[in-house]
Length: 509
Ligand SMILES: [Zn+2]
Ligand SMILES: [Zn+2]
Ligand SMILES: [Zn+2]
Ligand SMILES: [Zn+2]
Image 1 (cartoon, rainbow, N blue to C red):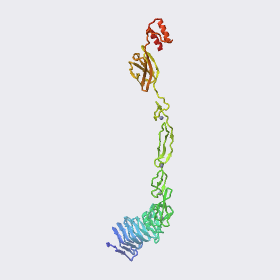
Image 2 (image 1 turned 90 degrees about the vertical axis):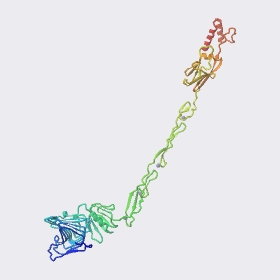
Image 3 (image 1 turned 60 degrees about the vertical axis):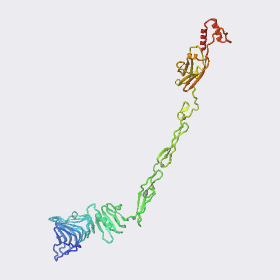
Image 4 (image 1 turned 45 degrees about the vertical axis):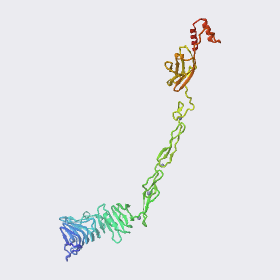
């Protein structure tokens, strides 16, 4: 074991016999090689018998070191498993796997392996014998060889070998599972390589330079880290993109890691920007966004500051509405925008109201009815009546005031007591001064007032004395019927009283 820091130790195996089946290290247990140089300079130059490191059963892990062989560099057989994480391998046959009574020998090249296999004939070989085929799984590493896979004894290499990572001089696609991307690189200063697996493709692309070509042969590849000037080609039928820009099948792009200028408004609801790198004509266009439109101003894009989109609708509200009165027309009001004040619809006049007069006053507006004749109560029956003392009937007056409005009766300005001095009945207002009351009045003219809520109806009436019945008195002058009557009465020698009564009745009629 070489435990020196540099691990420069090594083993050289050499023999004069070219038929010897020999190996530098023959491992059947657990072996780890971190470095050193292992050289197998001679022996039977057919692989499977000669190797720099041979594991028959047990495990070996190669993390580094340089391995030379005149046959195979790494051999796994009879159930042995060799994991290759690093190292440089120089041999006609790089990795060689075959089976034995303990099962298939297996070689695994790990995903992040830095192994470089430089093989003059085949990068890897599977041998078939009575026990079956060896097995090789490759997830990383670099393989330089005219042919990637070789077989001894007619193995089924497609079943025995799985390649889903690493780079190769020779097309490895026969051993790559479906769906795993494969690309081919054309780089100045290096031979073109087949790149297997997205990791290998991405890592190689990142190391390319202007003028290099990355040709994706199959599968999906999403690239982001590729230098300017690299040509990315999509020859397969997978989805290939660079920074989100898809490269259509059978098409290619020349990479520009754009340096974008400012967004410019297109004055059409979009904004665009162009790449500032010389020779690049790339541009991007987006829909404007952000900002807030009003009914007078369109939205201002938060990206390019250009106005875009439509004005919003106005906010209608009605102002200046007025109810009509009896004197003036009303108005429905104008419909205006509450935000900007624009008149959206002119209002219309509303017809004047008609006065609704009651008792000469409009109940709506309080105006006085010019045609109104106020009600003044008056005596409509019995005005200027005469009552003669001694008459047993009262004296009747009718006021046209409503009975319910009645207040009181005055004679010569003094109250007349209803129920004892007078009677008041409905129709409209009938006042009868009782005879007994009239007897208390002096002969002559008197004034009667019927006082109601709506006013006072006034008239005069006359109380007459009984006529003088003294026979000694000569008749009055004149030939009126009264005098004739007198004559008749005297003639029949009737009672004076009854004669007077008769005359009185005549008068009443
Ligand atoms: Zn550009
Ligand atoms: Zn914009
Ligand atoms: Zn508005
Ligand atoms: Zn009115």
